[in-house]
Length: 342
Image 1 (cartoon, helix red, strand yellow):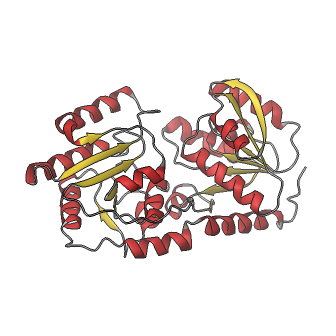
Image 2 (cartoon, rainbow, N blue to C red):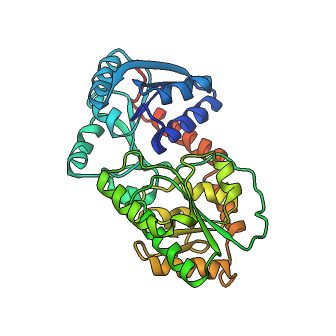
Image 3 (cartoon, rainbow, N blue to C red):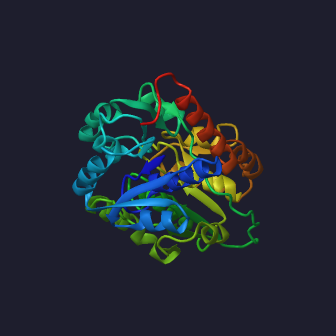
């Protein structure tokens, strides 16, 4: 069984590819990872984890798609395409599973989805929200690694954390405006930890984000990407302020695992991930509403819901839950008449 990467770099989809590979290995099935050599982050990570790898010489999307299509002509066994790129590259080939980790971002990508799905045994998406957008898809919810629970030390200064791409689609400019409002009300009481960078972000979005952050520059720490354990050790509350619909929201699930208070926006699958009864959910693109919720959370006016969300994570987004869903999906595919490897 081969898992094909969307990119050579490690993003959210590639993280889930590696977690899926681990789940398959724990089920006792042979599994390998196929990815481009340039960049080679996926290959290196997979190799370090002990997986069989096939590195195809390619740099850039066009070369990667061409190399993968040629390699796939002689492939045996199931090919699990993690993303639109490998799914389109291997369109019409048999015994494939198409896994779309995010919604197509533009009309050109949307037009490629029917092609990518041709002759696929199934199309998999990470949430029931995305299933409403991709007809006849199967839902395979994402899961995260466990994160050791720690209790933040009481502090006069509250650190608000954000983990992800620094873009307007992710609502970083909205978060900056909310923090600025809290600072005006309570000078010196809040800090913002931005963990991530602007990789894959357009120049116009970068300018908007930087403009929004400029007035609170003295309050912001920007360490770039950092180990998740270190991030959660340093924050008191995490915000996922996305404006564009999220197909899942890995950082929200990770926060649930880490046992930190969490605020998300009502967009895409985020309410589904955190759970309506236990979630602190605000409208997207509304700095005032976000600031108000953070203020009430800090003041203890609303419960943080940490225990209930940790329980929800254990049931739905833990490695054990993910492994069980992968086993069920593979069992469903392999038990379907006429679907045999080859």
